Length: 112
Image 1 (cartoon, rainbow, N blue to C red):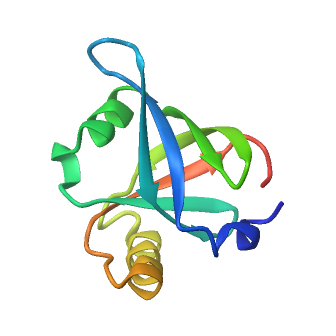
Image 2 (image 1 turned 90 degrees about the vertical axis):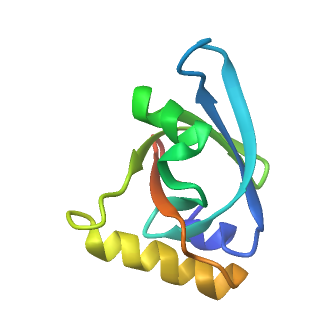
């Protein structure tokens, strides 16, 4: 399934590994899709616990559209990842009317 199939969905469920407990931590979050990648935005940037979990362990699980995917998450850098950063914020702004957060890129292990 292509990421375009997910564009009309409003949320995904992201499971990270707790950086202190090692336990799974699931959140419901808005997302955008582009080029076989998913992007989520952290309103509170590096203060968000799920972002801090990803900094410790980038392996995540995503539930979206009835599928569960293993993936790798990567916190984008505003300079090194400028184009992806801008694209994620623009797409989120178009979809939700808000796109000011820290973009995190999620690359599923298998083609969506």
